[in-house]
Length: 209
Image (tube, rainbow, N blue to C red; front, side, top):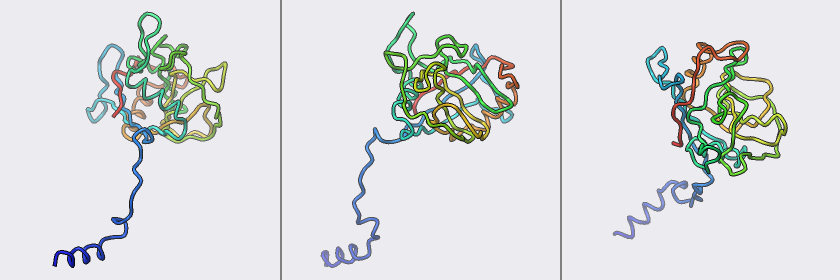
């Protein structure tokens, strides 16, 4: 009787349940990160719905494994210390440019904190990506920005788009999945046509989910 029930169960089992599935290695999965943004000095921004401005994003490892690894390390604060004991970490990075016309928020300079610094989470302070193809990008895209002196060199400077753009210089490595409306709120409240923020904002917390 037991063997008969077994045959019945096997015969009626969905085909998908009988197939063997190849597991995806953890190292091949797309990582997820978060950031919380507030006024410089520690005060949190509260939106119209009285919530702290927090974003979550899914990184695209296939776009550039090296740049994604660097970005996640900077979110986590991983990496060797350098001058004056500074550790690579997005925490404390100001939003040094908020372009209300194009809907672009630029940040990531945790070194000089003015957009002229930046350093990767590697010993050399720079990550190289030879694929420099550019093109259109959509709202929510996270874009690593190359150095002015070398289109293949990147440090920690990046931008987040709140609008679709026909052309962007840099490498799209991720997409905001939660909090895009909060970023649009920041652009509306603190952005200017020149890009100089109306108020001093910074990344107050960040990490990997």
